[in-house]
Image (cartoon, rainbow, N blue to C red; front, side, top):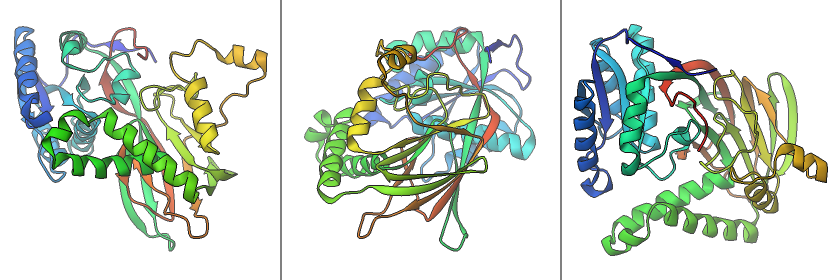
Length: 355
């Protein structure tokens, strides 16, 4: 679906800028001030909305939007701030029928959502991203709903995601990264140099080593729009919504964020992961047609609107970790994932394309 330019916004003039001024040890405050000033210069009537601790941002943002004087919400920060802003918009629509689009000023290292639509991250991209927001071209984004159940079928947790959810090794790496972050934060000198992608890389090597020594493969029964698929010997199972995974890989080249479908992608071994990382990197010049000519198989996957996933642990194996949009999610007996078609409006470049 081609982005559409909106000359007028229905709700009102205010641009609500959602950000955490204490992020990056307070360095974010300078970027927030620059963004507010740039929006003022463009006549977009900015209002700063600080994020709140303990998950309180979503409801507070919905309360603010229900005053019906906001034209748009703009998040400034990482993927977590994107998620909180998007959930606040959706909650306001569900409760009061108030709907506004979400603009992006990504500052994190991942920026999975922004990169899928041609939006760069960082302070150097601020002026260009504000120009994109001012132009107001929109695109629909399908949203994922994930529900976790225990062995008796009782609902344990439910949440929304906007990029991908996954089970297995990649989720364990994320969990290890979060533990490493907490430890590093206690040593300021170390934190200065060992952060962001370095922390993730360290966690990845640690988990890969432990997995190869102890073994962590699992099996799954996946019901994809009514079709039962069994995959055995997996290290990872991913449900992807946008074209990019992890900001770097395109496993399914014709994936779309607004077609009402997700791609379910299995990984069968560590060698499979390494091979995929090389073959499906977004900058790899080898196309699908090229791979077919030389006999290299394409990525195995299924497309679905609704997915039910049962995971089976090996004997004496570790629990099978889960993640949504790069954050830890509850470990459960089985999961249900649904595509919420055209559930969020996002502001994108006029010719949106991954970067």
